[in-house]
Structures are given as structure tokens and as C-alpha cells.
Image (cartoon, rainbow over all chains, first blue to last red; front, side, top):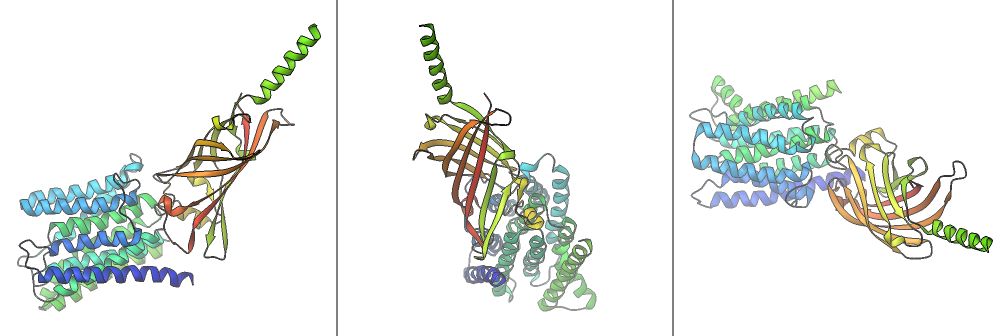
Length: 279
Length: 190
């Protein structure tokens, strides 16, 4: 009875997120907006997932690391919008690094200065994670942006069990709900090439997911930080997939997605293997 | 005449001494702070706080003028399971990394009966403060027969919802309602 109730709660949240974000994604696809609204779908998915799991919008200023997460997601998304509007690659890099570092510092604020080394390491891992998603070949193959967005959802899915083993059932639920929402967001965009993965997606969704895992690693401190860090290279899965497709002479979105998912799974398996051996 | 004056003076001093307010320090060796929480409807889990400190002012003739301040160390909570004790320190529960202490500050003290009262105060857990009322029974006040220190004893009970303090993990499998049980012994500082 106990496990079925826990599963029911997780499943209910995932279905709710899937339906809500699925409808939102279809609506955005049908709208002919001058601005790539699709770039906001993943950050909104992460915020919705937070709300479904914690059933609240934390008061401001937030008290406690968990309550800081939605504000980090929202602020990071806004920084991403600013990057898009200013269109400077160096600015984008600088702001990406800043968002990662400031997120880690903000989440772990109450533990500073003793946690400074951990925050520094988390910032490095977070930068690797976020910059993996920035890898984009020119010209990019069709559906490459969908593959990048999918990799964020896969990162959340892969991190979920490690968070649960790290004594955070809420993060397990949040990540699984977000993964379901990501799948719903991307389904309507699997045809054509109109989905846009821009800075709000990168900083709001990938950066937001990093903030979620910072709570598990820097505050709860019962998870395996090395295993979680190994997931940081998942962002490069679409790029690796593209290179594999090129090497094999495979073209088309299907091949890209299959190899991207495969690369992400290999990364996750390596992390789980390490966590299992290190226990 | 001299005898009568002495007797009256002594009587006045005795009455004044028994009715004066004193400051007491909570004696952790002779006190207990515990809580019960429902476990999937099968039974209740008992948790005990092993490290805490506090003091209170109390005057039996004027309990409304009392004060109470207590600090509990979160990492000292023991639920008879090493894994559970470690898990509840995390961000989903007591979040001891950010908030290592639980505090209670009494604000209002109301007599409800000859030996009963209601203490209302601010309970702060994991950075969230909520008003909680303790149903309190005044047990006894007197001198410890072993070391002659002036001691006092209370029993208190309260019920709160953990979700009010942001702890919503595993609801409703692990109960929302938490029953507090406090048995407090205090040693007079003056």
C-alpha cells in the first residue's frame, strides 16, 4: 500500500504536467508569435513541476534552499531573455557562467563560508553541464534544438534516482514530473524545424535543473556528488550524436534523436555504476 | 513583644519567598522532549530530542508574567533509525544544514485552571515560524531533596501540522499531525 501510494502521487503529478504542458506546447506551435515562445516552454515546465510537487509559490524572500529554486528558475529565464535580446556571444558566455555560480552561491548561502569549496566544485560542474547544451554545429541538422531540449529532460530523469538515494523524495518527484513535461513539450515539435532552443531554455531550464540538484548536493548532502557530477556531460549528448551520425553517414532527425538518447543513457549508466560501486 | 515582631517578620518573609518569580534553567537530565507521528496508519513513530537548552521565568502567583525560551538541536533528534535520522536532516525535512536549531519563544501565558495553563508562542522549524499553543500542567515546585536546589516541574502537550512548516514529503503516508510531549524540569538560577 505504501509504495503504490507513492507511485500514484508521482504518476498523478507526471500526468498533470504532461497534459498541461502538452496543451501549452500545441498552442505555442499553432500561434504565429513574432518571438520564439517555444524557448520558454521548458523553463515554464520546470516551474510547473515545482508547483505540482510542493503545491506552493514560496513567499519572497524565500526561506530555505528548496524555496529559492523557483526564484532561481525565474531569474535565470529572465537573464536568458536579456541575452537573446542583446545578442552578444561573449555576453552570453559571461552571463551563463554568472547564472551558474550565483545559483550555487545563493542556494548554499546559509552554509557559507564553510561550504565554499563545495560551491566552487558545484559551479565548475554546473558550468560543464550548461555549456554542454551550448554546443551547436553550424549548420545544425534538423531537429537539433529539439534534441538539446530533450537532453535537459533526460538529465532530469537520470538525476532523479540519485536524488532519491540522496534522501530527497521531493526532488525525485520534481525531476520525474519535469521529464514528463519535457516529453509533452517536444512531441508537437518532432515534425518540422521551428522549435527554438535559446538562452531562456538554456539558463531557465538547464540552469534551473542545476539549482534543483544544488539543493540535493549542497544542502541535504546525502547524495553521491561524483555520480551526479558525471551526469553533467549529458548536455553534450546531442552534439556527440550529431558527430556519430556524420561518421556513420546517417542523416535525418530520427537518427539524431536515437543516438542522442543513447548517449544520454550511457552517461546515466556510468553514473549509476559509479554510485553502485562506491556505496 | 520582640517575639511577636520576629514571628510576624518571619511569616512575611516565608510568604514572600514562596510567591516570588524565579528564573529557571531547563534541566536536560530530568526533562524530555518528544514527538509522535503517524506511520501509514499502522502505528506512531516516536522521536526524541536529545540536546536542548532553555530557560523560563515563573511565578505561581502570577503565571501571566512568565517567559519561556527554548532551543533544540536538530541533529540530536533520534527516531531509533540511523537512516531515518539522517534523512530527516535533509532539505525535505528539518533542513539542519541551513537551520540547525528549532526554537520556541513563549508570548502569552494564560491560567486555565488551578494547575493548568496555556502557553502560546512562536515555534520556528526550518526557518518557518508558526504560533503553537502548549497545554501545560504545573506539577510541583519545591526543593530537590538531594542537593536542596529549588526545582519546578511541568508537563505540556501540543499538536501541530508538519506541512505548516514546509515539510510535505510523503504526505499522507507519514502523518501530517505531530503530537508533542514535553516533560520539563527546571532548576532555579536565583
